[in-house]
Length: 223
Image (cartoon, rainbow, N blue to C red):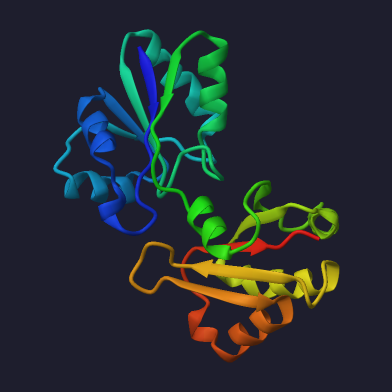
């Protein structure tokens, strides 16, 4: 009876660790954010296991089913579409419930977009804040205003179609001259880091709209 949280590559399949592959082969059942995406990964790794969905839309209901399997003595693996489960992906509620019910949880180290972008920014790393995805509407401006006063380096995730708006709001609420970095397509062939003031980075993407694609990480220097 044990739950494993198993990181998967954020783009480059070579980032799948030997330990993660071994554990995926050993678990009894795998829960995944998207069974289609994870099914392709498991096929690539030549791993055949029962595969079920565990995503944001069924997480609260799905936890009971996972706990039931664990209490039956099953060893369960949880993976997300990319990166480490629980980091802006489903997983928190399941881990919390397992801990409350005395079920062993083990999280394997591995791929995540957060750390490579942070380290590559060149901003101070001794203290930092991870904001994940900011709310789309209610509370968004409040979060931007808090980030504006934050002395630590701030890291957040953003989707490509919201990048332009996010950069405009950084200029509005944090300031046009605040140093930032936008990282995209981390670990993939077209990985790119765009550094500069908020205004300079927005100008770059305005002039290069074809570059607004892939997973986006924004790193903001502290006040």
